Length: 223
Image (cartoon, rainbow, N blue to C red; front, side):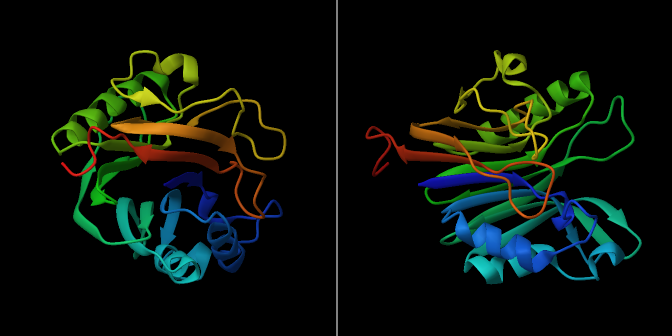
């Protein structure tokens, strides 16, 4: 299973141009079975009122669910989850706000035999830790195996207490041009991680995509 998380910065090129077609082509090139996107615009003026989640689904040939976090002047902004196969039991839950004004949410679903949580956490460390605990609790209310992925806005060393196995290497993911920090992550339970790669910078976004190749462990196959 090829799992990718990518904060797309609403398909923004370095020059500020929004290029949804370039985003779609980049996502299609990942060859992902499971793809989480953060900072996704749906019907916002700055991205031409297009449904960015649906456009990427068409470009990749994947099923999609969108989880709004913020409503903005007739449109929405949030997370998207795409899967090469059916999506079921989709839910969106708001996350606690204790320090920052920007609302955050988690998108939960069943996909590829796993319970999946896709999210984008606060830039405030303390608030992000509270939100992460909420995400894990909501994920664990569902059956294993588990996949949690997204822009957690926390470094690897800040995730030592995470109640899931972090699929992490040393390579940073942000900023895209000259990455210094690893804040995009995938964590699993009931899956064996085979390879972790930070992919080259895409034409859009200030983050680099993170790829994890994993398989469901033998003890869970067929359960």
